[in-house]
Image 1 (cartoon, helix red, strand yellow):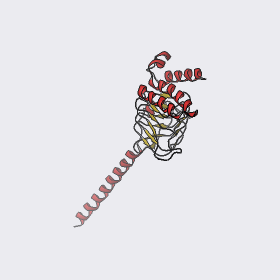
Image 2 (cartoon, one colour; image 1 turned 180 degrees about the vertical axis):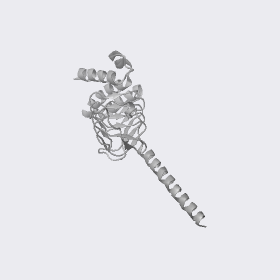
Image 3 (cartoon, rainbow, N blue to C red; image 1 turned 60 degrees about the vertical axis):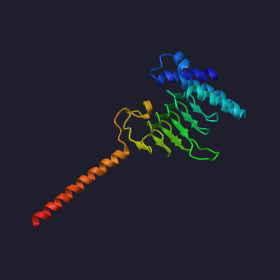
Image 4 (cartoon, rainbow, N blue to C red; image 1 turned 90 degrees about the vertical axis):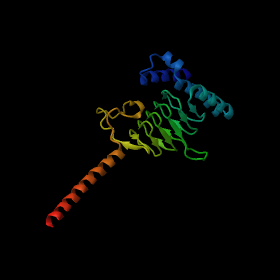
Length: 225
């Protein structure tokens, strides 16, 4: 089982990071993989009831990798933590299969309670650098969270969200395929229409139309005089 995990994860890094030139390179110098290996140990200790040793292993992992993963967090298969520095994964966070997280991502909680308080990420989710996903919310399969977005509401499967607070944007047709494609940092390369900027543009157009109508009325009034 451990060999299968390692083989699958090494392949995932090679597929999703063009800078990875070999599996040996990934194994030796990729902190995202090292953090997962440490987490497997701390998670087993946590499930065995050895809470303090589990936290100590997780603390050592954070010191060595710059990635903080609570021992109770659940990680899926073929997870890629790219770059990794500053990533924080909270206690009740759950991550599905084939997920990609970039540096400075936070899967955080918004409650002081002891129940479920961290996000759940479905399969194939991408969370861009600096994004914050907060609370016991669901990020649906294939969703994309753009860099530096702050997400506090559930995200539908296949949706892309950007901004603060995060809002869905239209990714358009993805080459006729219903399957989401890989998008580095969770953001498509083609132009996106930010909903907030679109609303501002509509308001500007309405204001320009209003100014034109007022100008006509003033000119008509001046002519009648």
